[in-house]
Length: 226
Image 1: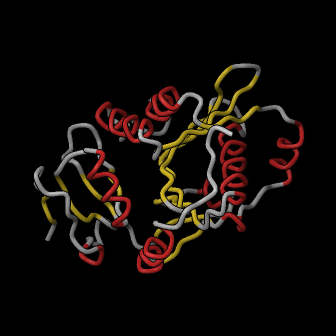
Image 2 (image 1 turned 135 degrees about the vertical axis):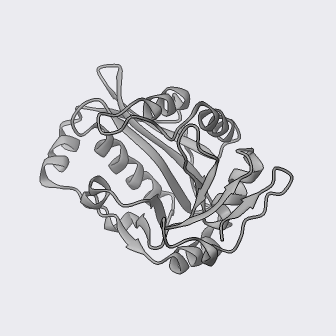
């Protein structure tokens, strides 16, 4: 049975109570306060819903992740990186990145990055928890992504690209930086062909929860504005 959260309670049900169909639906309701969002990620779930739906919280099994050592760079992507066509920055324009990620896509009519969602993650960014990657070409923003950094784990949320390979270059640059900083896992949430091409794979929800227990409170060497 689906758990409905109350606004005055920030607790989530155990992950093993998530539904099998649809895969990973754990709870509904509540709000997008910073405190609840932090608790959600620490618990192993994340918000994902369409405009007009109730707020839905998910913890899929299996979970799509990428280990920094397993990043796969195709021959063409390696060539693009060597050519220095793009310039990559961190936390230079979070607001524009999340708006671009929320823009309509050719393959879908709506977006799950609602105005309410954007506002919540902007507040997480102001508190130093959410971060953005910007990809520039000749001074124009052509790609990027955003997510949360907690302990030695990075929780990827969304990416966008306005030109070929821009988001891949941003992601590859992020993974290299996270590896330098001692991060051990990047949460990709749901499987996509794009992520699999970069080396993402699935682990069980219980394995993912074990990584949360082991690394959420471990300090990292992250310096996002370096």
